[in-house]
Amino acid sequence: MKLVIGIAGLPLAGKETVANRLEQLLRVDNITVSRHRFSDVLRDTLDLWGMPHGRGNEQILAQIMQKPGAGFPEGVLSRAVKFRISKDAADVGILDGVRWKVDEEMIREFPAAGIKSIVIYVAAGDDTRFSRLTARNRSGEAATTREQFDELNRQPNEITIPTIGARADIQLTNDHSSIADFEKEIDAAYARSIKPLLD
Image 1: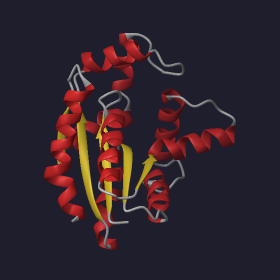
Image 2 (image 1 turned 90 degrees about the vertical axis):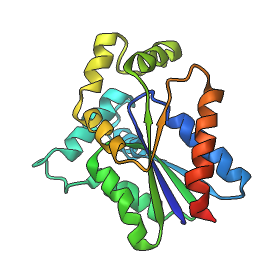
Image 3 (image 1 turned 180 degrees about the vertical axis):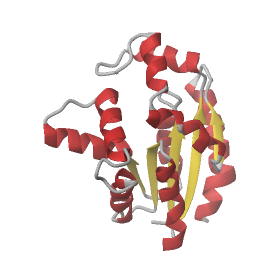
Image 4 (image 1 turned 45 degrees about the horizontal axis):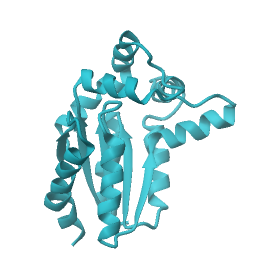
């Protein structure tokens, strides 16, 4: 692997849109791409326990795994994801869902192994994100009212995200009403900051 791209952002900020667009741009440039999510490990664990997927269960499990004194080593979830990425043969690995400081630190460790890394932060206002939640009406979403949505944003694995965003290599703002407008911003960031890392 040549490059790991970590994407941070609060729920519904547009992380998946960024990942999808970057994958398209990389493939046009004949660069192989793989996709990873911290939630993949959480969902695999929930499957083993026969528990349903969903942001609520995933947040609870992530908090248990990260809680001091719970018996897991610090950064256990990040280590599991790093192990998966390290085995990957693609040129670029896109990691969606950077939430914790240990996640960011894990991404910053890749250059020591000769793999470049970059962190992208996607920001969007609370009103915009809640509007997206109600518009998509996806089953299994933990928040259905604005109060529930605001409460989820105060969870420990969400409140650290803007701090990570302040240190990100690329910062994108997605209060766009059109995906096409946001994709123009992504395209510019790709040309300016990501493609040169692969030349």
